[in-house]
Image 1 (cartoon, rainbow, N blue to C red):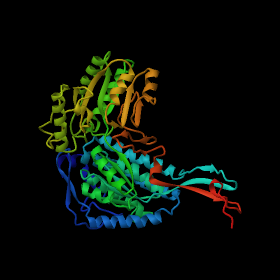
Image 2: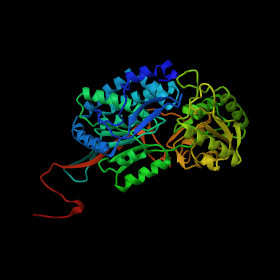
Image 3: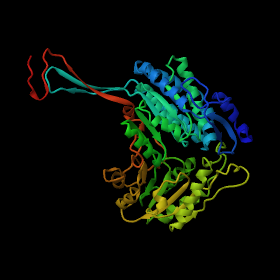
Image 4: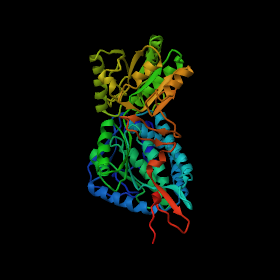
Length: 517
C-alpha cells in the first residue's frame, strides 16, 4: 500500500468494502474460482498497484448467463413492490458505505474525492427513484372499437440485461441501469471497465450480500470482468435481449451492429462534443463557473464535459480573458486532497491522446491560450497529471469535430444572432449535452425549440456537465439515442404487451368478416 493510500485511508476503505483479499472479477452473487488472466488495477493518483482480479473466461461466462437466466424465472414472479423493497435495502448499504466507496472511486479512477462521493450519491438517488417506481409500472387502458371488449397494455420483465460501463463513472452508470432493471424484474450481468475493476467488485459484493440476506435468487446481480472480448460474449448471446453500453462512439457502433444482427435491443450512451453558447446577454460570472467546471471536472473525462465555448464576438474578449484567468487558479494534484480541483487522467494512453489533440489543433491553425503539458516531479509520479488547456479554434477543425477525452477546451466566435451559434453547436456528429448562457427569453426559447439544439440534453444558464436523476439521460446522432435514469426510461428494460378481452358470448371478427359455424 502506497504512502498516499495509507494517508487517505484507502486500506480501511478496501476492508470495509470486502476487498482486502481480491482474487476474482467474476460473480453470480456468490464468488467462484476463475482461471482467467490476471488484471492489475493501478491508481492514476500515484501509480501504485491497488489489487488484482481475474478476468472472466468463456466457461465462467456460461455459468454466469445460465445462473442469471434461471434466477430471472423466479425473480420476475415477485411483485414489483417486493423487488423495490430489496433495492431499498441495497440503498441502505450504499448510504452506510458511501465514504469508503467514494474514496475507492476517487483513488482507482482519479476523479476528486468530492466527485467520488457525488457519484455514490447518484447511486443512492437512482435507488430512491427505483423504489418509488416499483409501485408505478403502469400501462394504459384503451377503448375497443368492438362492443363488449376491453383493451389495455401492460409491461413485463424483459429478461437478462447486459450492462457495459466505462471507467469515467465506474459505479453510477451501472446503478442507473440495474436499479431500474431490478425493480422491473430483470436479472443483470455487468461488465465494468477493466480500468476500474475493483469498484465493480465492491459494488457486486454489496449487492450479493444484500440479495443473499433477503432470499433473492442467485444470478440477479452478476459481474464479469475483462477487455472487449469479454463484452463480446455478452453482446453475441441471444439469452441477453438488451445490451446497455456506455463508451465511445466507435465501441457503440460495434455493439449496435452485433446486437442488431440477432434482433436484440440496445441502449447506447456514447460520445459527446458538448458546447456552451454565450450570448451578449449572458451573466459572465456564471458562464465562467459553468465553463470551467464543465471543461476540467473529472479532468475532462465526462461524456458531458464542455469541449467547445461558442461566444458572441461582442463579448468574446471579455469572456476569453475571464476564463483564462480562472484557469490560472486551478490546483492540480492528488484528488483525495480536497484542496485540489483537478486530478489525473485515467492512464498514459489518455495522456498521449491529450498531447496529440494539442499538437493537432496548432497544426490546423488554432492558437493555444492556456498551455497544456504533462506535470512532473513530486506528487505527479504516476505520469497521468496534465494541465487543463484552452485553444482558440474553428468548429470545422478535424480535432474539434472529434471528442478528446481530456481537459482541452476550444473557444470560438460567432456573429449574428443565436441561430448562427446553433449552426456551430449542431455542426458536429455528437448530440449529447448543450447549454446556452443568456438572460434573453427569446434566445433561450429559440435554443430549446424544434429548430434549436439537437442534443438530448439542453440547458439554460447552467453548464453541460452533470444531470439530475429525475430526467432521462442520453443524446442523439453519434451519441446513440439511448435514455437512462429518470422519466420513462424504465420502459426499455421491459417488454410491452397489448391485451384485448372479450367479455361477451359472441366472437366478432375483424374488418367485418363473417364466419359462422
